[in-house]
Length: 84
Ligand code: FES
Image: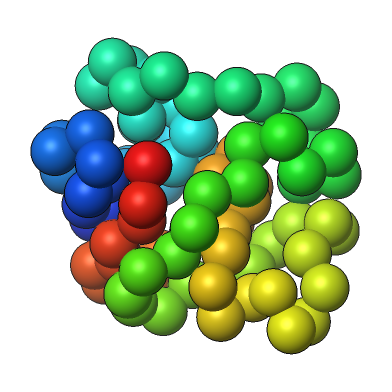
């Protein structure tokens, strides 16, 4: 599990194993665009403000990985902050 603070929305979500960050955000009422839910299309991208992320997508270029994450497949380590 990991914790994600969504700064613009003002909500903090706990993401359990077997659940995506995208799903946790949607469940918390955060408006999110998404499509493939498989880490390929990039629609569910969010800016990453703080924290360490295990990037599991096939969309981001290496140089984007410090500042963005793909919420349908990638996971935080501990606590992360995203700008959504
Ligand atoms: Fe396609 Fe997340 S919805 S990459």
